[in-house]
Length: 315
Image (tube, rainbow, N blue to C red):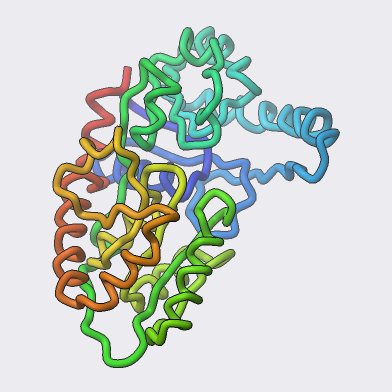
């Protein structure tokens, strides 16, 4: 494998994979068409504005705008041996895949969430992509032939801080990208209930914040609440486990086998209040969970390990 082009900007995952592959001596770059407010590095950036305000814009203007990808993508992609698509292909439903195969390119499709969850995988993906990856194991049920590749993290960028036995308010952090998907309403209700019951707590609600700034907030938190609905943890939990923070997140029963060391506090909408009380009242539990989380991330999410795994799995 001489050169790899990652296409997409999904929570910094393409950028982290590319960086780790470069450390292994590969030529690996990232091309993004997304508007990025979080400050992730891209080598080629051509943002295309999509409009989800009306059904008409979704069905008419967005497909037209997506056609703007190919004139940018084609001359760049021709210079690489393997094209690693993240979340979406160059044209809707993989209609560009026959072109890449005709040009002798190797093609990888990498699903990250709502692109595949509760949906039928486009037939072209399964027929022409030479390898399909998913970023979380819950997505395997919608892409049966896929391989789970845990999202990577550069551990050097997330030094272990641990959970401190703070004097004063306990800081609870929640950083939703989309409130309705993360269970934010229940988090807000639980924190208000804690205050009503006399607990000294402070909610750190982090939204629309550059990633490097958000991480500085993570370092100051005592308890992290990730998503309560989907059934698996996101990048917030992963990064905060690396920092040594205790994390509340919902892991569905069928996915518990993927977290055998139990580094998380399994929390859904009905248990968020009780679990927050448990962690607030037990600083030693917070510290112990922080250490377990760090160890788990080192074993499962190290970007160097995952980059090597990818090199073995690439066609």
